[in-house]
Each structure stands twice: as structure tokens, then as C-alpha cells.
Length: 207
Ligand code: T5A
Image (cartoon, rainbow, N blue to C red; front, side, top):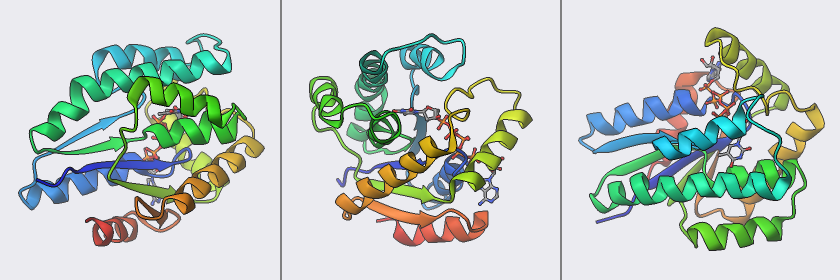
């Protein structure tokens, strides 16, 4: 059976959540057993760590501690949800994964990429997605969408949205670098388009 672990990546407000819902529905209509999940989080222990990481009052972490918290949550997520679901033949679609840590903590916050790799090796080995969709769009457009979503949902998960434009530009370039380095796994999707056009683009690239 083909293993199918699909991830969605991108900056703030790129439209990942929206597209994951559409893709999951389409796959289900085609008879595929699909689960959707997200990072940081996805299982109760990791959701507790999510609160520490993404809420403004979640705490002030030094770069290495923050990186280890993301990978601690990821390890729990893989062991208790992702890997068992894949073993049962399910397709798993995840909103963000390791590429987000490399892009946000590495390229965005300038935390040493080699240290991220070391933490990754210890915590999850070489566990990787089979396919990754990078929703790419200009920073200002994404932030505008993200702010609208946060205010619509009265969410306080705005710690990363508040960072300056230069941070978000580094983040975007970081994601693009990762995508260019692993062309087999990544599909870069133009996320400036309307929702239906993006969904069609993703569907065309589903293996
Ligand atoms: N983080 C995460 C790290 O720093 N390191 C890590 O390792 C990981 C895993 C939480 C934060 O944690 C950081 C990154 C984040 O800052 P998150 O919950 O995925 O990660 O947060 P966001 O990316 O901020 O989630 P958003 O919900 O804002 O973005 P989405 O999911 O990409 O976008 P979505 O689908 O919710 O859409 C946002 C708004 O735009 C509209 C939607 O209706 C919604 O209102 N929209 C569109 N509007 C016009 N045209 C389109 N094509 C649209 N698509 C969606």
C-alpha cells in the first residue's frame, strides 16, 4: 500500500486550512479514508504545548527551547496519531510540519539550521511527508487574510502574526528555498488566486 502523508505549508493566512478541508472532502468522495490534523498540536499533549508556543501569554522561550518544544509536540503527534493512521492505510493531511520549524525558527528567527537538524534527528529521525503543498503568496496579502481570520474567530493565537514584515519575507524565502531543494516532494502553489483555482491546482498535483 502506498504511504500517503501530505502536508500544507506557507506563511500566515496562506489558505492552508481552507484548502485542506476542500482536499479532504474531495478525497473522501473518491473513497479515500482521510484524517486531517495540524501542528503544533493534533493530539491532546501536543495541543497543550501549542498553547505555550502560539499564544501571546504562553511564555518566553529561548530559541533552542522553542525548537525542542515544537519537536516534542511533533514526536507525540507522530507516535500517537500520524504513524498509526498511516499504518492503517489512511491518508493523513497535516497543516504544517517540520518545514515550518525550519522556515519560522531557522530562516525567520535565524536559529542555527544545524541545531534544528540535530533536534529533528533525536526527536523524529527522518520521518517526512510524502507530498508537501507550499501555498505561496506575497507577505502583505497573507497577513491581511490572517488578521481577518483571527478577528472573525476572536483568537489570541497571534504571537507570530505580530512579527515585522522583514521576518515574514525571510520566512517566505525560507519556504521557497526548502521547496527548490526538494522538488520531488514539494509543489509550489500560487496562493494569490481564488479558492477554487487553488483547489483545482492542488487536485491536479495529487499523486
Ligand atoms: N509555527 C508552527 C512555527 O513557528 N513553527 C512550527 O514548527 C509550526 C508547526 C500557528 C503558528 O505557529 C507557527 C506558525 C504560525 O504562526 P497556524 O495555526 O497554522 O500555525 O497559523 P496560521 O498559518 O496563522 O493559520 P491561518 O489560519 O492564519 O492560515 P491558513 O490556515 O493558511 O489560512 P486560512 O485557510 O485559515 O485562511 C485565512 C483567511 O483567508 C481566507 C479564509 O477564508 C480566512 O478568512 N482565505 C482566502 N481569501 C481570499 N482568497 C483565498 N484564496 C483565500 N483562502 C483563504
